Image: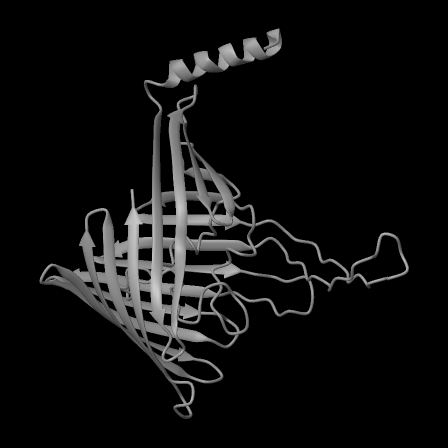
Length: 318
């Protein structure tokens, strides 16, 4: 080892030793998988989460807190850095969720695994699909705080330039590979807030997505209400894509014989209206949990696209 590397390594070791007494570090992992009977289409095995999480927190010399979280998934590594300023938290990093994505969970859903989409149509955008703004936010800048019993978060995504189409050309060396044009978009602003009123937890948010081309701008939004009374968990949610689709959800869940059970109803107003019903039964067994969902889909205008689906869910974490 040369002298400069030796000095650097010694300095790093000294810093780590000095901060070890107050720093905190943890590691955890999570796997969520499903076995699905697709209404006569055969059995399919999938997973929704396959992750390892490493988190570290400490204090800087000025007294501000700093936290770092790395999530290692099948698609790559995402890192979040959060600075607690004492007047709110500033978040940076490639893993920062949009403000809406961090608050739009569905209190009417009781599935062990299949609540991450929040709306039955999804949450990743597209024609008539609710969009949480996360996909077009990219490497966001976030600010979150709590004031007067209201917790809120604001995120600003990064802009993306439009890219012109490139025609293929077999006469060049090397060959020019063709590609379609890509539409850009402005910085996506996302706003979300949560509060509690008379025991009910209320959350709402909106993302402002403005495209640079011919695609219409949109402001997808959500509203959720959760309430617990006499052993019952009640949930209500509305997810509006702002381009023709709106889903309204209602659900109730409770515990019976050591198991968690819940029923969820949803109505989607779109070009073709669709009704949904999901019954969920879950059992926690320490490090592993198991659940069964029955999902019934009823599309207006006939029975050709109606489905009945059974899903077996399992989760293992540490």
